[in-house]
Image (cartoon, rainbow, N blue to C red; front, side, top):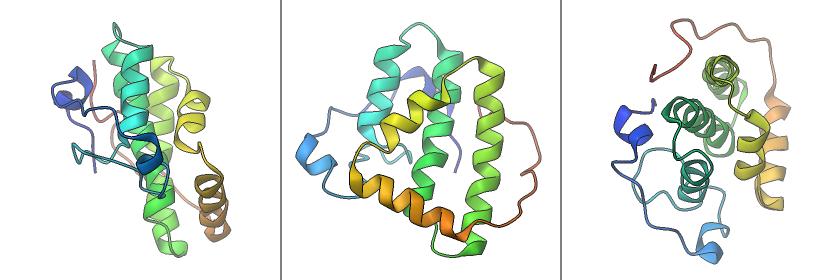
Length: 138
């Protein structure tokens, strides 16, 4: 999964999700089906309305952080997600964005924090995903 320029430019912004519905599951609400939880996506846009470069990096990182919650169930899936997360981490550093901010938004409930910790039980050695770090270069 990769973010698209339309995501970065806000062409498909979702409506604000109902917090109770959004926080009832690991996946939360993703009305625009771009792999980024809607509350996280909207928070990034609210924080960086004038910086597409930072939005691009944070949205990409948010997508990979969400993958730890929804796609890791063994060592192989952890490794695949970790490789993409490493690429997104490089992108976020290069852009000057704030990875901790994204992590706080993504792991905002006890259920999500526990799931992240459970995903890391499958940790193994990992290499680079290769290619350019940012899905969208601005």
